[in-house]
Image 1: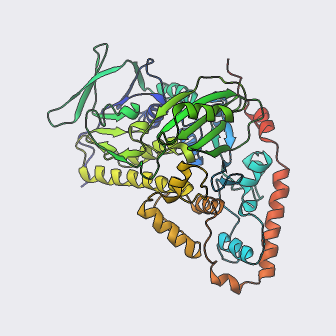
Image 2: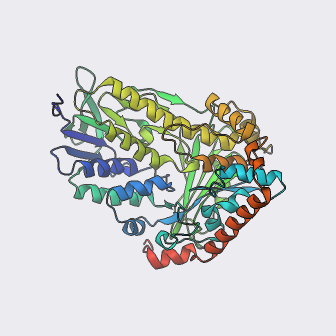
Length: 506
């Protein structure tokens, strides 16, 4: 007979604030708000946050809504703007660009996959770009946004969006939210960590001398991994051979033009720059490899690419791409930068925090903890990282640029066997190899492969059984209806001003 929990966790200590720490506090605080479980978060005002991940993907909004947070209030509090996807400039060749949208492309025609229908039309001589069939790509191109409930019964009905936001303000908003749920914030700097005789973490000792004992600990201490690495020595799996960029230069600028509803990622001589437009300012950065570029060269490249007056001084953030070998080790879970790092090319940082937490909640332990459960948890988080790693490498290894040493390296560098298998399978007939709970769905693969010039050798021959004239009319009709409904929507700037304007920061 099933028994009630015999030895429940009574206290969780979160070490570190920032976006990861406060997402954890808000998520767990919301679950346990009516229980006896205590949650304490310790952070120091002396320690700044990295605050790079300012672009998100649609699952983040689902996480916010699941907490019962009002979307408009959150957007205004975090200076957020909307995002339909990412525009990639100069990745395949200088002067070329492509768009990676959220959502889906077209819809099946007579039971045939839409992408295969598009491939058939290309073989017949139709030159209509794939993204002409993407609601998000067309809305982004026109600089427009819409109220989802006003687009019901139109091709925009299933369009998906995300946010550009100020990560420091996200931390502040979620701190207030979590504290209202009963999470206790303690100001202080952790000076040492004490373990039990068995090797579990027992308590953290602050510089003030205060001791915080806990049953379970969540490490949100950033790259240093105070608990997961410095104390538990969990190890780190380094993926620099696949993703050679190892530094980021960041700076903020004042907006001088209306914010477009998409992120821009532009390939540069030794990496790529991002532009993330919020309502009143823009986040800019340069992710680069120091084997091909000095910090001063990176600063010069970044400052020559930004628009508007600087609001901050450029700062450099060194990193090593990879993941902890044990994300959950004993009675400690690592989140955020303490867990691992993948460059923000596809805006996955905050998503990995939320998804890891959702998985942890599904496997929430008691004080006895079962190693079988921990091992399976770590396997799944590793799979999430590997999936994103492979998708990021896809952007680099398919380049046709040879104008700089960095891009010549990327075109010939080793790639993971898992990615090689996916590329080889795709090039036969446009097929994809699906995984379990994968983030990047077919549209993402089609968008990047097409944008980088990677096309299959043939379409599925069953398409030859269709009347091509009818297929062509169906594709043209869908595209024309999409253009008409997109042009009826308000501009992104007008939508922000009417429905969720954020006050200009002081």
